[in-house]
Image (cartoon, rainbow, N blue to C red; front, side, top):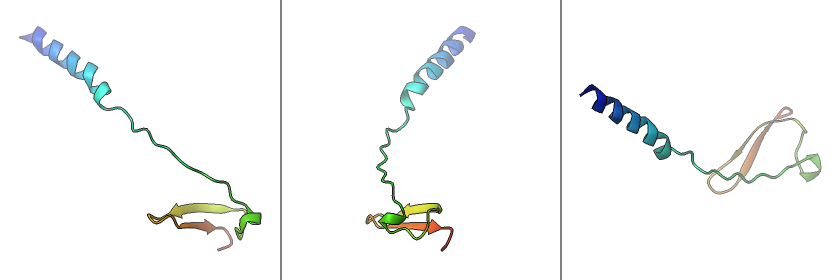
Length: 61
């Protein structure tokens, strides 16, 4: 009984990593500058909504 429990635990931990593979995420990025219309070079955060509109939090407001 004890041996079969060890085998079940071993199989569980051997198969579990195969089932929990990380998602393949793809990120699209573009570098923007003051020449592109940003009010400041210091961007603190950025956000894009579901419709594709972008917003940025700048140090100067």
